Amino acid sequence: MKVIGVTGGIGCGKSYVSAKMQLRGIPVYDSDSRAKLLTATDPKIKEELTALVGPTLYCPCGCGVMQKEVLAKFIFGNPENMAQVNAIIHPRVREDFKRWADGLGSKDFCVLESAILFESGFDSEVDYKVCVDAPLALRIKRCVKRDGTTEQAVVARINSQMDQEEKCRLADFVIVNDDVRDLAPQIDALLDNVRKL
Image (cartoon, rainbow, N blue to C red; front, side, top):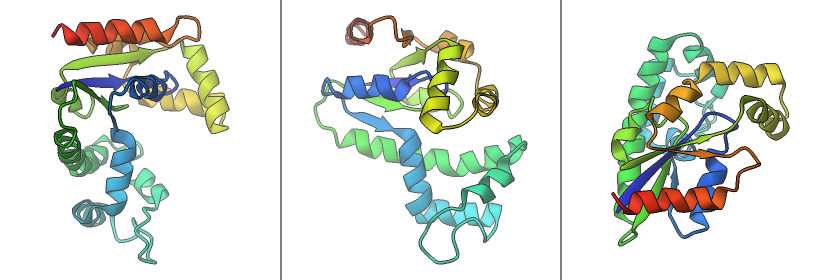
């Protein structure tokens, strides 16, 4: 089975493209949502994060809910703390992905969708790297509408992420999601390329 890694900066539409691929019968592993689930439910992650961040990280009521503001305060502006948090979460997500992929049986392809495909090292788990790209102004507009936030907040988030041009450069294939070019032929071309691997 060939693994297609799909990434892209905020507002580029990587989840939208992944959903289009899922409609074609290609299984999609959403690493961002799985990481959130594992962070809330995996005993090892909870134990190690609590030891690192402190006892106030998870709600004291025992419901297992992480107090996001506590984690955000711990990692904000501190790359070393962020790296320590990632070193706890990323290996468990990688293990979870491998279990998921092993359970797919005889599928030709699957998709590993990740906003931080390159930053996390998950690109080493895929056979083919795809970056979904969109013009900056459109990305900002989409995020403002989707998240009900401000342009300034979206720009701050974009600036905190890996440079979009760098993601496109590192990718094997770029899908342009600019609301002008049709996605279907681009996805067809992508799958044709992966079949030739």
